[in-house]
Image (cartoon, rainbow over all chains, first blue to last red; front, side, top):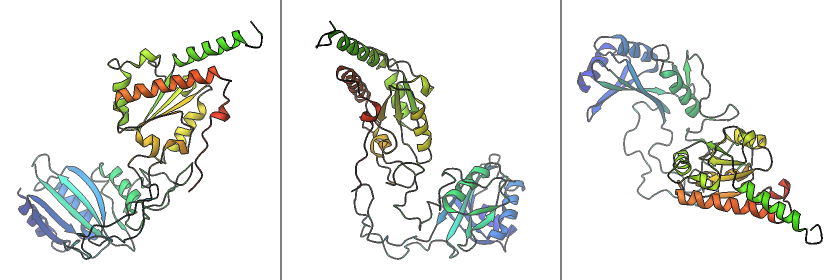
Amino acid sequence: MLPSQLCEALAARFPEAVLARHTYRNDATVTVRPEGLLAAARALKEDPLFQMNFLMDLTAVDYSAFGKRPPARGAFPSSGVEVRPEDGVPDEAPWPGPAVGERFEVVYHFFSWPLKHRLRLKVPVGEALPEVDSLTPLWAAANWFEREVWDMFGIRFRGHPNLKRILMYEEFAGHPLRKDYPVNKRQPLIGPVN
Amino acid sequence: MFGAANFLTSKLESAIGWARKFSLFQYPFVTACCGMEYMAAACSHYDVDRFGAGFPRFSPRQADVLFVVGTISHKMAPVLKRIYDQMTEPKWVVAFGVCTCTGGFYDNYATVMGIDTIIPVDVYIPGCPPRPENVLDGLMKLQEKIQAQHSRKAVLPAQRFYAPKPAV
């Protein structure tokens, strides 16, 4: 199926769940409400129209600093080199950014081996309760991806069988890919803080 | 023979140093991309067996030299320390690649900024990754160091221990 047809088919199937859709250079992107994620994902996997049997990627984006100029202070702790934003970076977002003004977006990339088409699904996630449904029951590949997103972004996945950190150690406090994680904060298990 | 010059004991010390520097059993602690370069340097093309270091032991208790090859993360740091503690004296540590020397270009939440913040290091081999010639140069420097330790008075482990730089 063509990317635009994919978008339209999913939007026709879930008119109340799909928030936005667009295609760009044969990449189809559909933004779905968190409440409609599980139904849409199940349809993508099981419907003969889609047959998305391969979850290629699952990640997240923190839009809290998107398009904003970084503060003109701070330095790399080891070298003392100052962090200097380039003048070309605008203060306001040049691109409208996420479809909904939520802080996070969880991004899923699906591919269909039988039909050879692919689709990107985005789910806005709020800052107050960063939680979405787990897709591990549908794609086993989601298991470790969701653990990574939990580790790096602090987004919880409802129904995940084993939601614990995968990259960082359990003693680590915070989620390092959140934009408000201090860039020079170090939490060594042993040795000096440097 | 046992007079003031201590001819025999000094010769014996020198012989021990010679024997030790040419029978380095290395423990390759390989964590990252430098490992490929280490394998290339350790195999027959560059042939570290010429320096008596061609016999990697994958048990720290049987090893003399700890080759720390690749980036060490904070999660891995306690493991590295434990491996070092499990090695028996005499033991030496080689920091292979710039990540183990200083942290390299990683300056973030995950990376140890140089393994000398955790364990003492005898030889630093910088490079990203180091050239095999550089590795062999480091190996020869380690041999010189081992020989020198036995040419002078015996060096205690505590004297060898690296004192960290004072905080600036």
